[in-house]
Amino acid sequence: MNSPERIALCPADALVERGRGHVFDVRLWGQPARAFALRFDGRIVAYVNRCAHVPAELDWQPGEFLDLERRWIVCSIHGAVYEPSSGHCVAGPCVGKRLIPLRVDEVEAQVYWYPSRDVEPVTLDVPTPSTAPPP
Ligand code: FES
Image (cartoon, rainbow, N blue to C red; front, side, top):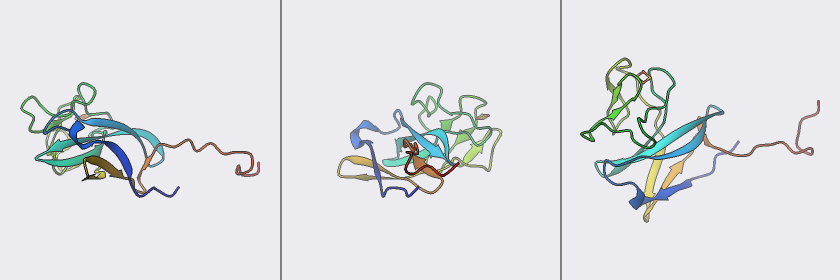
């Protein structure tokens, strides 16, 4: 599928500095997954919501990705610690690995996501009889 140029995610003011993340559905390598965007040091960052240790979602409450000091992204399962700006794991069972980043941008009070070949938007790609391949 051809990815659209960009997709509106949420109003920019919905992402407060080191606040809750905006969670949304995606397709990672063709399979259902979720992703999140949050604001850290004034910049919007976004990643697939999948730990680099095992493929589990990170948030300890829906949309809550940061630790109590609001400094690190912390996996709720085994405590891997990620640098929010880069997605690199800096402590825990997957040091040296990183979260899968998504390209996002903030334009005129709106946050946009730019899908890629690996991380696409969720669509209802149900073949119609005229487009379905022959049996
Ligand atoms: S699943 Fe995230 S640290 Fe193990």
